[in-house]
Length: 287
Image 1 (cartoon, rainbow, N blue to C red):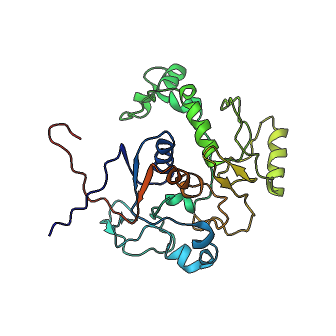
Image 2: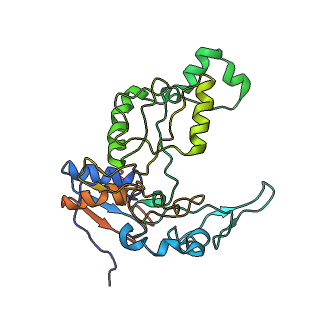
Image 3: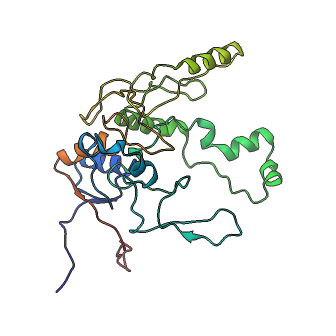
């Protein structure tokens, strides 16, 4: 008996619904394309999956119960270049090879640090050569393979803005170091006493410090997909190198910010707990 399951044809297949794939799949669905989103894990519903179970410190921080299950596939690890790399069979303290698992990926339990890649990063090779000479990199790092990006920060900024709106980032305008034609959609989080001391000291030295840009919502928010976002409640069980998911939905990930809106269009179908072993291609067309 054949075990081949045939699914309806779609315009686009998105493999993995993490921080990037989930937004891509949602935006394509909103734009009218038929999309199939495939992810090896489940859909985590923050209000039910995390509300009580996240406080299991052993299961969350050591056993990584919200992370990739190692029996599915593993990575290898060694402590120095002379050791033979062996596959990791169980998670242990101070080992963090864990990948995300499920819609939203590892962004369910990261610290939420965000921000833009500034203009210089897009022209590192040419800017370095212009400032220090054309042979500087070759003389300093003989085997360097540094190249400019094929597009500029200015060309990329419109996509930054849309993605920041989708995720509901919190922060302040970081110009002129990183020019921003629009502010982040949410204000920065309140400063801590230590942060205030640091800010005062830096300003006294002539610097212009900025609050950290965060993917944790500083206030209730509605993004362009119509997804309502809850504000951070500062409960303290947030990050542990990192470990803890968010039971209020304040921590930005595609499960809490986008994918549900894509599904609601009727254009995005999900294939969850589905591991991709092979992609068949047509030898003639390459498709």
